[in-house]
Length: 280
Image 1 (cartoon, helix red, strand yellow):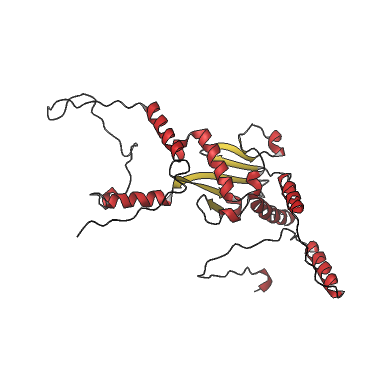
Image 2: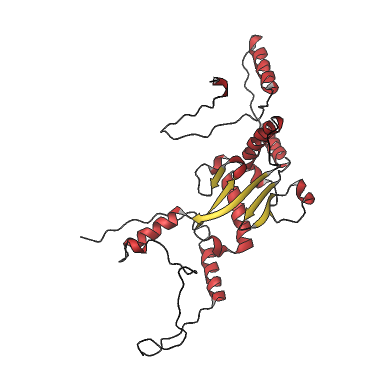
């Protein structure tokens, strides 16, 4: 077995830290070699180690360069509808005009926590806030076999610039090795799932009632679990007709929107409920 082709995997029980990648890595390794020679020459000449202090102007200039960075073409799909994640140059070459989620480069250079906020706002404008209440966004990139969750604790440490750099490095090597079906760009899929804190709090609330394990699954109203309504107005036991309650869906949605505005970002800061055991 050739040890040079092995990929080492370390399984540890301790909390894993994010690794840093070297975006100067290439298949030939020329860039890395030149950097090493430069360091060796500086240290080999007997010169003193010098520490370069980065000024505020240099930091600002670096940030401006990042914002001017060519934004990649990233296709996002949600519920069968396509979007462009960034306002890229390739948008004019597409056969159809796709809505753009991030109109500027902030979502590219900032952490994924900021990017998820931009995606959420865009989808809420597209589908309405009710579709995302107590839901966590899931962003999947099949080309990298990578799934990111909105509530991930590492989101603030990762940017889409990191994802793009990793994709470009691996894609370039695939092209050099003449691998088949190399994707032209990154394509992602957005889905939702119940937020952990919301689901957990729902279970805690069940313990404060007479609910049992049969009440774990939420109520459904679909073809397999239909809600049957008696529209005759007459009870099967020949009792007096029950009062008919007419629900105004528009007013209900307006009330929900007002509640969400009053408690803006409440779902993000929702606290876990405590279990109160009243049984003796």
